[in-house]
Image (cartoon, rainbow, N blue to C red; front, top):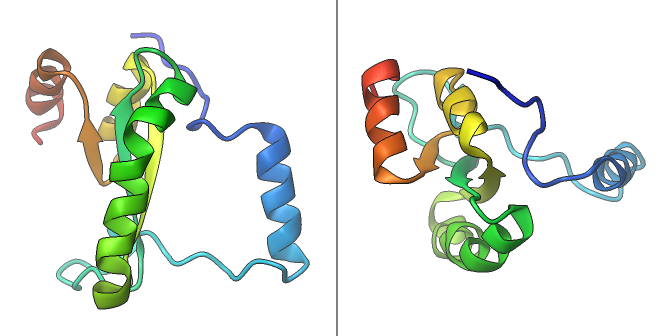
Length: 123
């Protein structure tokens, strides 16, 4: 399987600006990823990454799913649990890469790919 090394839809310029803003104190440090908490620890005050298959590209994926996967879920669970949801647009190969390397907390993919991931990664 060929795997791309691209991370989500964030470009170099956006990543550089975010890094600069954090380093200069303009943006508060991000909460830790929930998957990095100790086993058995409740998921509170942390970030959850949800990866999705972006068949038509990252922009189309964001337009279609960010309102639910990012905005709605963060608004719903931020005050009560301190959870922040992030939505990552992934290509087909990245679906397998991110699930296999446990780089995401949840995956939204097509049924055939999901069945393959269930078998290959015991999810």
